[in-house]
Image (cartoon, rainbow, N blue to C red; front, side, top):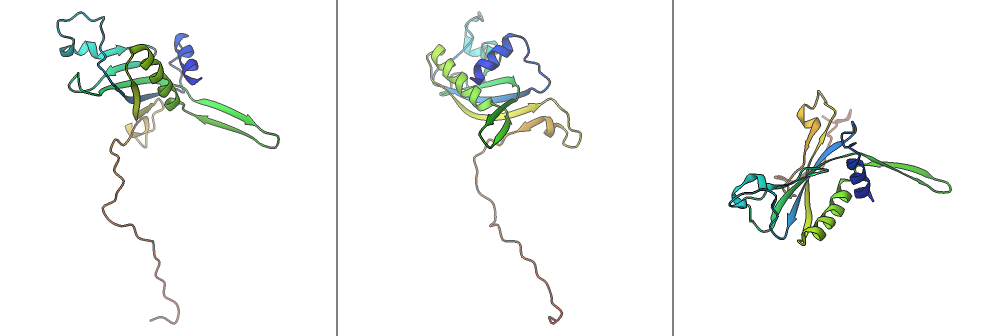
Length: 170
C-alpha cells in the first residue's frame, strides 16, 4: 500500500515535499546486477554500471569487489510521513510515522520478481532530514545509524546509591 503511494507521488513529480526525509537502506542480492545500458568493454571495471536506477529512487551497487556474493546494494529515496487514524466506539487515535521499512520490503519483493534474483533488505543506514538544527549541527540533519551489532558494555552497570547522614550519625 505504501509502495504504491510512494510510486504515485514520485510519478507526479512531488517527491521534493518539504516534510520529506531521505532514507538509505542496504540490500543484498543473490546474483550480480549491473546497468546493461552502459556500453563498455568490461562492465565490472566501470563505475557507471554501478548506477542501477536514478528515479523514483536511487539504486547503486556498493559491494567491493563488484562480483562479491551476496552483492550489496544501496537504496536511497525521499519519503514523506504517513498519518493513520483509527476510530473505535470509545477511542480514537492518530499515528504519524515514516513507512520506510514497509516500502523497502515491498520494493525488494518487486525487484526480486523483475530481476529473478533474491533481493532482501539488510539494514537502514541513515536518514537525512531537511530542517537544520543549529544545536546538533550535521548530526541533526544526517542521522547516522549504528552498523555494529555489539550488545556489551566494558563494565557492569551498578545501581545508583545515595549515602546520607542523619543527625545521630558521626
